[in-house]
Image (cartoon, rainbow, N blue to C red; front, top):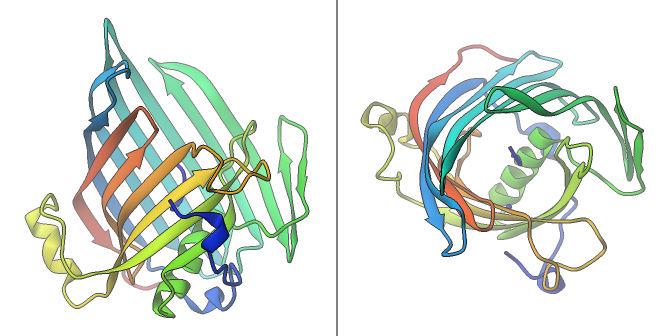
Amino acid sequence: MKHFLIIQASIIAIIPAFAGAEEITLPGHRAVYELSLGKSENNATVVGAEGRYVFDLEDVCSGYTLNERLVVRLAREGDTVLTDYRLSAYEAADGELYRFSTETEFNGLTGQSAEGNLSVDGESAEVDYKTADDVKFDEQVLAPLAHIRAILEAANAGEDRHAATVFDGDVDKPVFFAVTRIATNDAVAENTAEDVVGQFEGIDSWRIDSVYFPPSGDTADTAIPEFRFTGTLYANGVVNDLMLDYGDFALNAALQELEVYEGGC
């Protein structure tokens, strides 16, 4: 899943993508979302969806461990496809190392996988894939959790926009240019489970709308986005009321379970 945001690039005031973000820490937590079909374009073959998405983050002092699993059954005209996506990762606290392993199965058969390390060094980065050619970037690249913390940094500073090149991990398309609109938020989504609502009391939140463009050099006002993510981002890093938009169809993700871990560093 794109981490963890449509703004025309010509009007974006781009802040330093990770300036000061090391001061923001994310508490460990486990969030479970129920998936359902959101929009479906008239020409889309997807007519139904159901599934579950689990996001499990742990603060391990030197950084974070992250485990994600997304299982969704997509009903299409004439058949169904069961997609099972798994991610296991470690990200250093300073965002300079991201170690990852992903695997996707379609109807029980392995379809895609990736494993390796992203190393970030100021205005450059390199991906060392285990079973694919290495890739180098002559620009700043944010690892997924660094991206979340950078958005929180921008939100806390009163910014309403953020843009960055973000690492996704896929071998064919390792990075995207993500542009994010940030707006204040003062309500908990109605589709949130009742026993979770109380955990958001007194916590600042922002409505974020993030669009992912191919890093082809095109600006966001001319390029066609490949993915769109909207949700409510809380100051503690928890995301609620998600929509994952793949273009011709979208998935809604309603938060059903939330456990915030004690401790951390």
